[in-house]
Amino acid sequence: MAEQVMTPPGAMKTRERSSEVVLHLQNLTKKYGERLAVNNLSLDIHRGDIFGFLGPNGAGKTTTIRMLFGLITPTSGNVTILGKTMGTARAQVLPRVGALIETPALYLYMSGRDNLRAVAASLGGVPNARIDAVLDIVGLRGRQKDRVRTYSLGMKQRLGVAIALLQDPEILVLDEPANGLDPAGIVEIRDLMHNLSAEGKTVFISSHILSEVQQICTRVAIISEGKLVTETTIEELLKGEGKFRVQVENTQDALFLIKQETWGKDATLDEHNAIITYAPDNRGRDLNLFLVKAGFAPDSLTEATQDLEKIFLELTGSKGGEIK
Amino acid sequence: MSSVTLTTAEQARLHRAKPSFIGLVGGEIFKSTRMLSTWLTFALMLCFVAAPNIILLLIQVPFAENFKLGNNPKALDAFYNLLETDFLMLRVFIGFFLIFLTANVIGREYQLGTIRILLARGVGRLQLLLAKVSAVVLIGLITFLIWLLVLSGLMLLTPLVKSGNLNALQALNGDFWHNVELYLLTIFISMGATMLLTVAICAVGRSLALGLTVSALFFPIDNIAMAMMRIVFLITKNDFWKNITAYFLGPNLNQMASVAITTHNIENAGAPTLVDVDFNHTMLVTLVYAVIFVVVAIALTWRRDVKE
Image 1 (cartoon, rainbow over the protein chains, first blue to last red):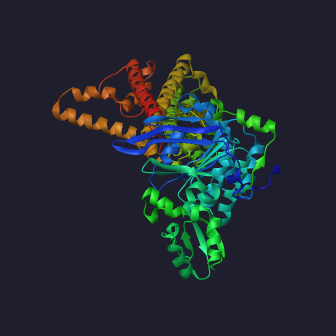
Image 2: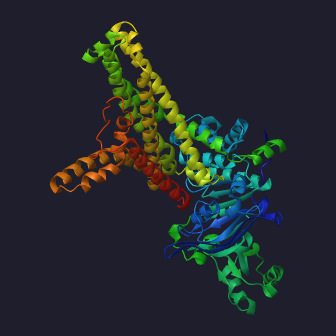
């Protein structure tokens, strides 16, 4: 077995996005009585994307994922996977999609290896060598013979990922994959996602852990009350509104000076005592020149980015307690 | 965690893999055999089935003395006595075993949520249900054959122990073997009905506990309902209360063997219906129930969302 070189976190973000849409949701809707769990949701996920699907608890993330796999029948709308409509080509397409839906569902009375054997037997055509390989991938080879009921939540999560990887899927759909994992496990999951993406696989991650999504994903969609709020790249989402963040020695004096200018009257200080301001002609170098000439040579001058948590709360109208 | 690179051939092989019916049945059998409780139930139920015969070997009972008569009608009666006891135990406990097995194979999959692993890989809901039922049928048949072999061995051992030889076997005539076939047929029908009942209840409840409890209580409740109908009939003197029992599943199965076997008086295996019915009637009632169970199981499996 040859192990691939790890892709550095963030490397994927600079790679050009494939034009091939591998997962297409079109006006997907699920209604329970009068309540709309998922409301007219449309999304395109391209090959190689590490796509974050964000939303507060009860936003409709899991219902959407269950509709992807035909576990829940949509009230209306379509799902197309790898160019084929789910309604008619489910049996051809789904073997090429790996899934970890909600908490890992496992046969607790069997060993980790037997769980994989049971699923492999049902799916057909999965050799023992592949079972060894996925056990290696998720780092469970040493505990493969132990009953799953003795596993920690993190180990169960890893086994769930191993089951999802059994058939070397082209698309991997993971619902809250970092649940129960320790920090080292989370880093390993992140590396795995990047490696899979580098191999041309598409990863669709549903999560409410924003820091994880920010570090893993190339694109994100945020849903709230079943509706798509936004769908964009992480960079776009975090990008400020053309403002810059300046760190100088005499902050108050520099801020006073900037506020005298027409472009700088909205300047403010952030929680770290850095100035957040627009620049003359929206050009950072002009702002730098202005400050240097005024005797306030900046220690640093960067584009101001927004905090994902703040954006998320604004977009979803959530309470802080629902996210991490 | 690290990714592992596959060779093109390995990758192609994995990508070609599709869920197959045979594979699914194999998977279900694999899971069942990995359940310690399956083996424990198998062994415990076998003990119950074999217990009367083993006790008979150890104690003196008047009818067993007839085995010493060799080729004699009384020896034949003694064999019928053995047959009735053994097949009654076989019918009752294979039923319990099937309820346990079916509830585990279907109900537990929903209860653990593992059903979504299989369905999310493109396995059809009805394809999976049929595979599970097929696995239960296969395991049920193998269990039945093993238990039948054990019982047959014990039935042969009884005259040998009681009389010191097997001369009594000469008393077994063509009618006896024909009746054995009929009795076995009624046991198969009872097994099928019990399994389908549990399948339907698991499809409704989607839980191991519910599937196990309701299925195990169904027949006792059916028998208690018979007693209730009798009481209501005695109070009201209205034949309706007697006639309605002709359509109860349990009592029809209880007397199926006794109405099927006409050349020998076979005891009912439990409370019979309160009115006389014939073999065709018991078959028809069982068939109607079986169809209802199948329709309920298919409709609910096919149409209901999987939220487990």
